[in-house]
Length: 116
Image (cartoon, rainbow, N blue to C red):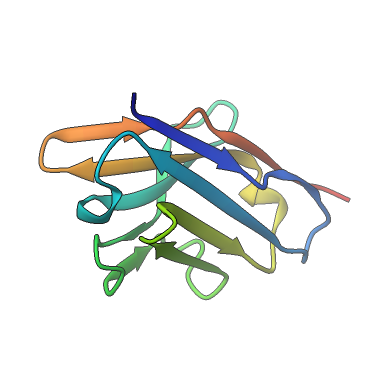
């Protein structure tokens, strides 16, 4: 059974940091590219960051460049999103996503709220 389980979300003040984790099981994690998406209320889901299967290549949305870092540990079947200098506009549900060719898996999401 394929599972992607996100954790690490919560309430944080502007300027603070959070580290999201996504634990994968039920598929060969090391051959999948991994992505983080987010969806704010009333908005479309957007790509935040992506990392290749080997971890060498990464891409970021312009809105998070220099503040967020995606990484993965293939030995632990886990992908991370380190989020620094958080802003209220980063408030959203964050989703983990695994993709390989036409196969896509999604996690259930974790809420991140940035507010004073």
